[in-house]
Length: 273
Figure (cartoon, rainbow, N blue to C red):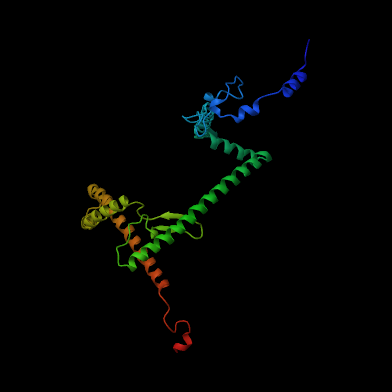
């Protein structure tokens, strides 16, 4: 006698069961079951207890390692120096630069596909450069505003200026090009080193003038010329430091003038007459 799967399934569904009675009993009194869907009570997970006390096993990183290795190899090849010949000249350049040069040459000769790809690359590069420059410009502007307020606060309270590096007035922003440069120490250690150089430079100025006068009398003296070159480094440092101090003072006076309240009669010059 044979039965198909449908008949067996129907028979199982229609067979009486004591599931309702068993589920109503406490867990410790239920009968042991061999059904994998309902293991014995002592083997069931306890409420509030993790099935992985040691944590979830880490995934194998074999795939990531291969990707990282591939990326490293690609970058190494892109930056590897290769020999390039252009006419009679032979020189070396990174492989990626040589590739771009080849694409530019092809685009100049009418290859529209190469030209299109180059334009896409240039557009992405320019977009990224502008975004980065804008972010740096915004940060520099905020940095100057916040720290200049701190300097003013210390001044009003009669305190020594705070040790902030770089100094806000050493952060030079070109409003036309957006270029930012720092003309001064960027750390406390650099500031200390500059002070030591300044002291040594001041001490060497007397000798600088002596050597300069001696060379006027003996311009062919190699020892004096060498000494003057070394002493001139200190002289140039002092000139740069002097210009920096002048800039700081000019900016400070400008801020003080802008912050100074207007005196009575300034708004209406006709009344003063």
